[in-house]
Image (cartoon, rainbow, N blue to C red; front, side, top):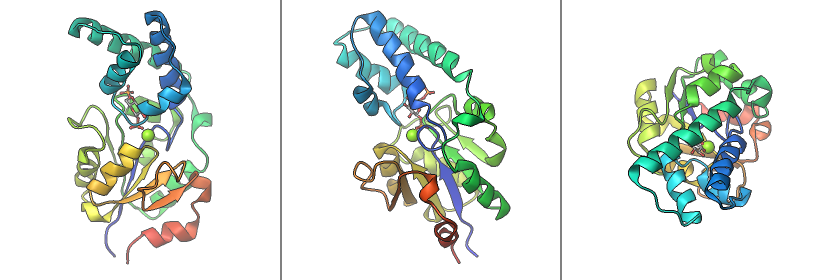
Length: 218
Ligand code: B16
Ligand code: MG
């Protein structure tokens, strides 16, 4: 049997941390004197912290020195950490544990492939860290999604070739990164937004045993 590896994005796939990112960015925008809407927050999904701040400052038409930019990055993250401090298992998205448990029983290697530099503490907080054989996150990559780097490193760490990896993603850039890595991409969320994915599901409740078994190559 060919070895298959499963790679999960974090925000929007395992937990909904987007709402906390939104609150922290909104607080910063408010302090800088402009409005930041939930609709604009959509642009931030799967995007690195640095790129998010660049977009935010563009929205507010604000110019910043490097020093000021770095200070706002720290300020936003400290604020965000206060929100995630309170996270627990109740915030795991529906049926994620069922799928992780299925993979563990089958002894399938599992990785996290996220843009977040806070991925590990979040998985710890919600009690899912033990399901992952490796974590590849914003601390390990130099190129952001849609560059495939994060997923290619994850495949290498799992010891599985890229073509035998399956990626679960909620962001367009993440689906593009998985496709660029020659991996099978599974979109979690709105299928019209994630139309480039090989398969689409609203959430893990729609992913049944038959589909999961079908992903495991002969
Ligand atoms: P941090 P993912 C991404 O997580 C979020 O979707 C994105 O909004 C955030 O800016 C990025 O992580 C960086 O997060 O500030 O914690 O390093 O979807 O790639 O798991
Ligand atoms: Mg995501």
